[in-house]
Length: 345
Image 1 (tube, helix red, strand yellow):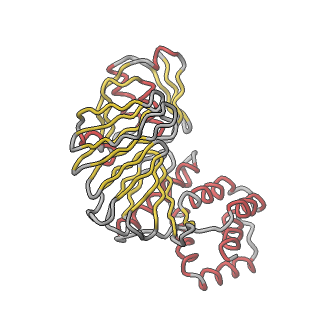
Image 2: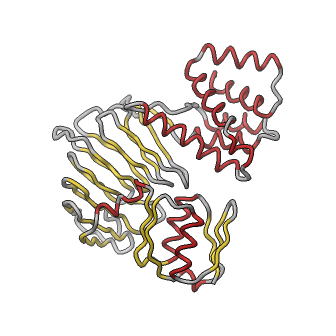
Image 3: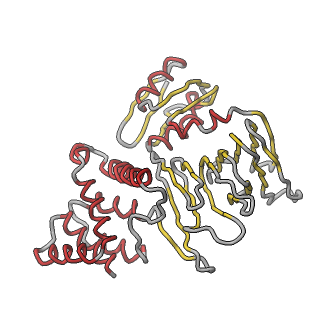
């Protein structure tokens, strides 16, 4: 109940509609509940951000600001399993937001969207699951209670127990993540994907398994990884493919075929260091990466540009810089707005 009331009061405060009695009530809630006080502090940090006043895309600024605050918390604490806010019923909370929505509507909605990205839910066994979801343009780092570390890419989601119990350590991934798994031979680490499973004891490796892509990839940096594909159409018997460092498996979901090939693990995990590497990739494939990393939709004004083959390597470059240098290898024009990137010949 206090969470719901907190949303009502903070919404009205941001919108400038709170009465003196409601402001006093909010203060009493913050004094009585330490967790709510911490959430209120995060919101205050955002409101003090100078970029909030100047940005035309306030929702994007808010998500990135809160993500930065959240990442700072992860760096300063050995383990972070407590989400910024926990609300029992999304539907009732959203109805409250709409009820009090005013001039600050976009801010309030964005706060709600961010808070619901990470939440806890009980399993049937009584264990608590933590779900972390990154929006486009957002990356994060997670440290699990067993000491394993996960770099979660943009537009990705992972679910894991607050504390590992039983004889295995199991997580669920949709999207891309790089894992450094703490060794524990007594408890295998298992990553469940929509179209397969990865099983390890202690190693580092990258997985790319986005729901809207037709290829699942796993590459190994150190140790040994077992990839087990899920066959749904071909009726094949289940395989287990073992991978060693600098090797990759590519599983085609359409053909249900597996290809193993050598790779450079440093390049496969380059995204964790702010790098983007394109090697003779089609512009359409590059556009997917740009959308995920910068949160802007790519629009092609003609079909020819989609098939351009481009090569480039970038680290912590701006979107404008990346497009500028790519346009020098294959001539094309582009415009960048708050919401999209328009590509033309």
